[in-house]
Length: 562
Image (cartoon, rainbow, N blue to C red):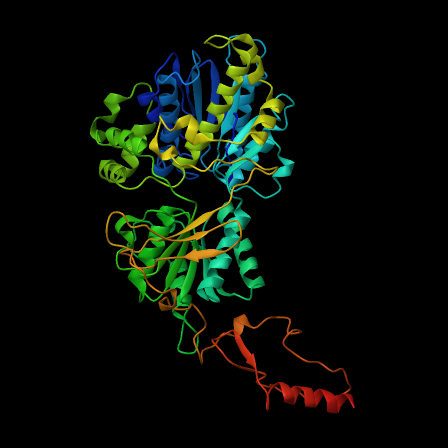
């Protein structure tokens, strides 16, 4: 997840289409992988653009919105002459969830802007925005480190990269690390008294790693995970109209399989919005709606959740950018005319062909995706930093030589990004009302910010997200509301996802019973199972009992020892 500051901005292919439409200025150029709008100082933005294997033919609508958001923001800054006489350029590249491609695009940036000493007219590259996927973000960062000239270039990322950012002093996260979200999920399970849950995750390296870490953290808190499974890609059974064998195995395990096996009443699903929607449809279509689901970073499922109860999402704090919504809507409402609106760019047309105008128009009327707001913040951090450099080095408007030289001092830029306290409300409230009353912040040594929200996504209206809780840096959840209409509801009314009484839960018995057993070494053994604790809920011991409980154990220990 990530930091607020970047030296290069890279965007997705879909984003490229939007760039031609809204960015104005000299020399816009494009090829299959990149679109560039020149400026006195360049930023780069890297976005995935689409899923591996289909990138460029089935582009991702939400990632296009991420790219469009940065594009829109930079355009607004230039039109408002935010830095007197200086234009901020933007180069957008797509990664397609491919680490190999991420390495290649990083090398292209270095070759174009940093090691290209022969071309003295090339503008400096100040920073990079993105990527938002951990695997590609890590690969891009590592690739820059192969070149002495680029190893310190500032990166502001909405990626939940690993905690050890002290190894990457040039990376600044604008969202908490992945480990922080995992801890928040486990604390939520404890708050809800869920201790018998499924962990289901979409295919992909990032989801697999996150699921393994979540399972380990949950089991450490004595939360049993009887089902740990990969959710298959849609292409595995596309067009069949029926669930795949893998999906049937998941629903069978959730049901409990037979009368002796406990059903699993709580599930944590790790995947994007499209996969989350498919998972809910699978639940609705195949068995009763008793299962309660917790998603991560899903803020809008629209009508796909109709009829499903108890759908929650642990997500980053979400802000709408009304000015961005208006710009996006104006663009997508003219979907049928998109090819005529675009010159020398096919990405938006590709998006139109892959999702259709109906989907594109529908999305323009719904809430924004989660990450556009964070990518805008990343761009704002870079813009603020550039303005500070210009004020320090230039007496007049325009890009003076001292200013351009300072933009290439990556070590100095990193020091400024880390030490400055960022007040984006003061700088950008005239650009968008979303910056109003935004809490100022600074980056610590690992570029980390805290905070999560809990949203109830179970609704049948277009706006199907109701905030129901907050999680803060003190590792505590404050849960306020649950009902989909926003009314107060006691959290006790939400069922506990636990192993059913009188059902088989053998997979939850710890492999090492040292803390549950008294062992006295000897040549012969007798074994006794004693109800030391009073009965509580399944998988959880109650208070210690006297009489034929703790006292019996103590008496046995005394007699054998004596």
